[in-house]
Length: 269
Image 1: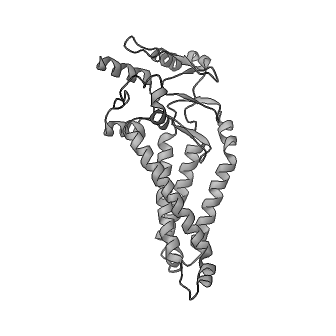
Image 2 (image 1 turned 90 degrees about the vertical axis):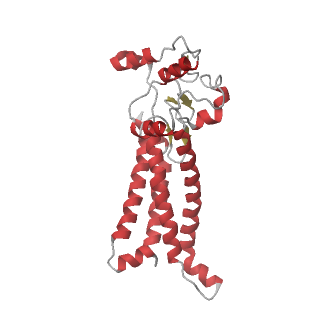
Image 3 (image 1 turned 90 degrees about the horizontal axis):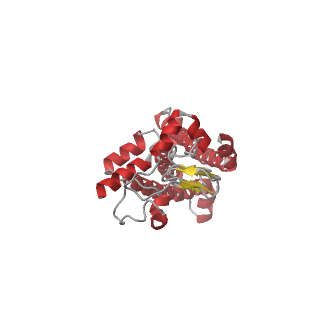
């Protein structure tokens, strides 16, 4: 499974590292704030920027290479005591109309909130979306790491925008100005555009985490069996903003969403 995840996005990951390296070196090789601090022997800011970029790359690989929560086969569930207990917890209670279902593609028994990814060719627990940027699905196990990566990436991009701007020099003619600043202008445009993209991604995912839902559930609620019978303002997995965020970032165990859904259904009766 790990080999499948690694090979699927190898080119994307190599491209991400290459672009990060090129932009970072562009900022250090030109007369920017970072270069001026380095020449003065004030290494705190250059070292801080380098460490932030390194952190963003490490978090990128954590989200990219981690198992997003691939659903285990039936034989794996019944072979272990924890898997057998999980299978029993998945059994629908009397208060819910949801039934256990098998995936129409890989025929695995799907836990609630799981979905088959046609790119990864496997079912993923608490499926959010397949991200071509990281070459992997975003699911129950790597979603928090994906958000942490977005935070680190946004801070690095905004710092790069400020640094690129600080290195732009003035010239008597437009042609000379463009010639002298072409690489910094390219870095400024690149980091500026991606800063906007990351802000939108981070904002939307933080909002979805705060209401305990996923991108797939938010976009396809009307055709998801365990949600379509609820009103639009009802979410069986919502426990309040603070509790939702705590569970999202701090609870690392596998959650049996069937039990959570069943408790909400009983309380709604």
